[in-house]
Image (cartoon, rainbow, N blue to C red; front, side):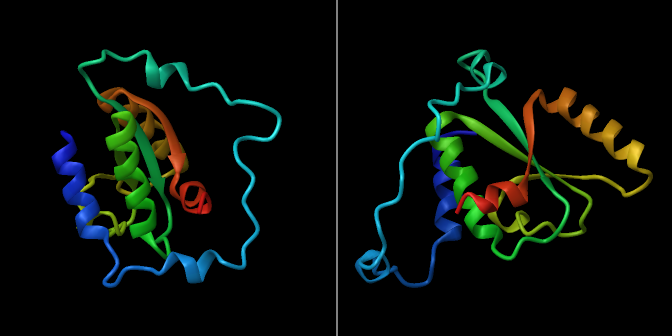
Length: 141
């Protein structure tokens, strides 16, 4: 996917009115920057890809998120900034990410072992560098 497609995804996510940041941040102390204890090295699986091909990550969605738009915005920004395309992996009938135009792969629920095999198959098919939980992405703020 090219950047124009990701910009269209971001355009579908926007708030109805702009947020006045000065009112929100005036009373907040400055946030610490970076990781505690030094730099976290990038995953070699993400950056060892063919420069002309995309790196892909799986995003596991097991429960509906209260604000999928926030996570979709982060995923679209990562796609533009780092060339990392998300693939949503879910067993839910509606994950909340369909409306933004993200690729969604559905697992038909069964035994726990079947889910692990299905994720392994999706990892191989999409060449996923890693799979992260959507709740972890939502917790990043």
